[in-house]
Length: 217
Ligand code: GDP
Image (cartoon, rainbow, N blue to C red; front, side):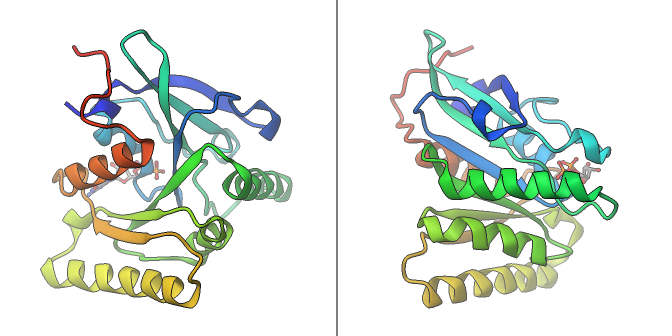
């Protein structure tokens, strides 16, 4: 069983000063709203409602922390669910608050080991996704893109979107030698495609080894 399946809700944060002080590794999940982020987190953690999406803009501007405990309930790592972006009708003040929270978190959070960026396979990268990359990549930390809802595409469409996302990441990497590793994979929560690959990567970024002690059920 994957270690991240032990994840449980830890805290909701709406201001940078309230970010957890523990110096344990964390992985951020980011993406446009409706891209499939909550579903991907739930599938990876094998839980039905760990992360849940809200279609109400005012209620989705928070950062949610999930904690992965060891068998003494001491936190070993955090999964961080960032607010979904891209709502058409968001109040200016909410948008400004969101941008400040997100950009500062991504640029300055020392505990952050990598970003999993959720991109809907039918849209590919949008400019808002590119903003996230522009904020985060200069830290030199890795990004892994989950190209979600791959079940909605046929084989050639899947190959095309993966190539287009991969080409854009490659060009970012080759133009910016200080950027970390930027990778992508196809993902489908419905068809359970790419789950093992994504799980291995998250566990690896969190520094979990095979013998990391975790509660077993
Ligand atoms: P979020 O706003 O990024 O958290 O998106 P959600 O996880 O709430 O998903 C948005 C919608 O896409 C929901 O109706 C999900 O059921 C659907 N969805 C999520 N993942 C997949 C997937 O892999 N395949 C398909 N076909 N639909 C998905």
